[in-house]
Image (cartoon, rainbow, N blue to C red; front, top):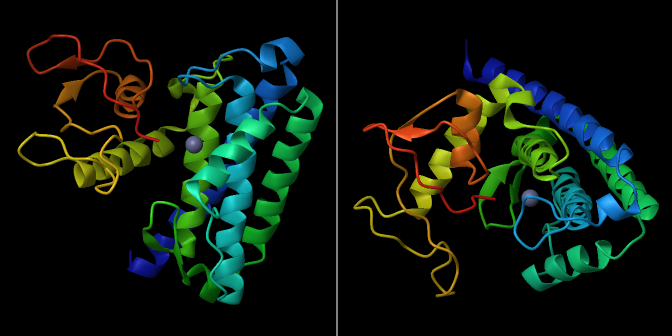
Length: 242
Ligand code: ZN
């Protein structure tokens, strides 16, 4: 298989995962009333509404990258980290029906935008919110991670074991690469953003064993069960990854 074939297959898989994750989130949201929507998610300090506001804002932000790829005009995901945080906070104060409508509209706009990209535009370079320069073909993967992992974070019955196995495998590779980029190889910790001394630090990841879905949850810094280190002891939780 040559590189072009492989890239094409990965793009199609990622677009499928975006659709599957969107459906999973939609099913969760359909089962929430105003009170349960406003109840805590599994993410520290975030209600389910915060998670959904973040997902809607993320779709709009990624659509900025789609615009960038289509036009060549640099349009960053977010104007600033503060603007991103403020949009999540104000979105979390919306009534349930309006928040769900924002989730759906932003997801559809992103889907339509991605569907309209040509092969050449998928190869255009864009810059993520983390400052990484990537090809636009990375956008569906970035969105798939968000909708599938946050579907679990909504704490309404979706578990890592419910996510596609191929997605989980790719996610483990992605998380380990990210943790390796931000961890010092000697095992001491380094800040993820050197100019901000107080951000969480990322230690090296030990070798662990367990069911693949639980290892994926462990690597993502989410609740897990039955993950052990090589000496059989329960693995210590890792800090959040996304
Ligand atoms: Zn997220």
